[in-house]
Image 1: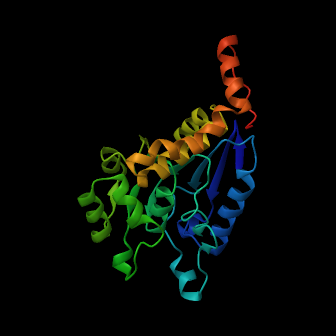
Image 2 (image 1 turned 30 degrees about the vertical axis):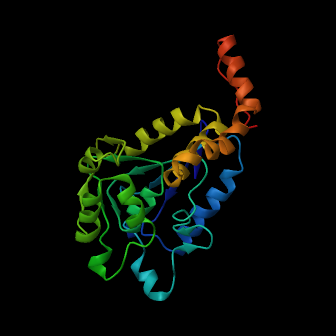
Length: 248
């Protein structure tokens, strides 16, 4: 894990196994997020993989021996069932397949190399994409396209997913991490309380009824408007200086 400018980079480091997710990786991601979530000096994350791969998914050899890549309370990969409250950007090179794709879908933004490939090949292996892929994907892209990706199990290039709005940026080969860090840095320059509240409303409001939307939103954003950071933001604007966020 590395940190710079309010951004923490979490790297899956099993390149010889194409960064397949085993129990140790899942626990490592969960432990990193648990530690970082409480730190006011870290406002955003980047999740990436070493050696030119994002992740080829669950370690099937580990699966056969009972080494499951699941953390209680956080799910697959230490993130799928309980993503962090702070914004997280996936930086994808090479393969993001099966559970690897599901890790990327657990993130808020995706930056991908032009050579990156995405897919949910679980049906080809007698499995089901149970780490959120078949639930999240049809909420992010058109229904019939999501069905095609999930049912064929085939690989899809970053350019196609960019066309569908799933990938935020496509970079030249080898450029995903640099671009993701730049994007995360722009996010991290904003007030942390405002970022967390904004992310929460975007995610949770998908299931809100029209007649309760603003009341539910108010419960989440009201603390932001009375925070020290809100006062600091207004003062910094009036004084024509950069704000000094404290997360309070």
